[in-house]
Length: 316
Image 1 (cartoon, one colour):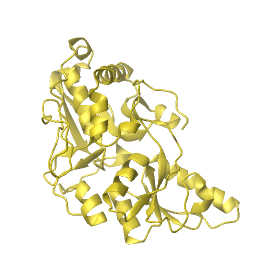
Image 2 (tube, one colour; image 1 turned 90 degrees about the vertical axis):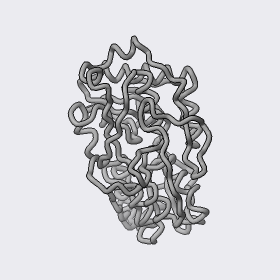
Image 3 (cartoon, helix red, strand yellow; image 1 turned 30 degrees about the vertical axis):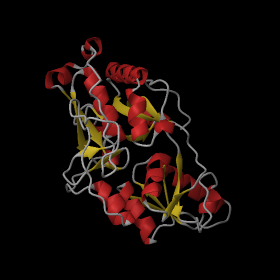
Image 4 (cartoon, helix red, strand yellow; image 1 turned 120 degrees about the horizontal axis):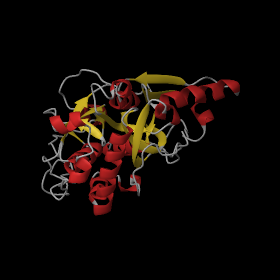
């Protein structure tokens, strides 16, 4: 899940280079104590979410692992190429809905939060060592729960991003419509596994297999779709909805979706108590409305959950 990369904005790659829109991005809150002053959008469209009202809960802070209490920082592994959840500005500042939620959790626990850019498929194996937690729009799956703890923080769902008018007639809930098409997907994602199964359904039905184009980042996948080398991209409906809105009508979101499961913050398997502290902090933010304010500011209000849980039941 982690990789070294240049400081150039991944958001610009996804929106300006990919969609042909020139945006100059400014930063917003990326750690406890660095929140901006309002919940409105700045002139460049990046939400300014104030976290000034979030105060430390001493009882919860006392339950943090000693290493984090001593350092005063929660190090977060994240694939920062996934707008609007987490992405970079030209200056290298990481922004997004996940960044603001993590910063609010940090303020509640009295520590700073530091996002470390990483490749998606390397985050979970590095938890408890290089990274304290993983925040990268992870679906909570039974397979992942075998190796890590996960704290639910949003609703998820998978669908397709296609060219305007959906010329191939693709449906996310009907794999047979994808047969013979090239579908871009991010390496290490649940959707990559889904495509393998979908392709088998195609060949079992006597149709052409799906050409799965596995790429390191979601922005790479959007680039291939816009360039015509991919017919669609399969991913979470939050990022794809955002990409469609930014494309000025060039791309469209397929309305049907599947895998309606929660997304989660990942914590090392032997740190269940730490995971519970994060869940408790998040539930305080749900109670006081901070959580909902962040999601609404980023256009993700429909993904809000009523309660954060450690290792909740999942259909995936």
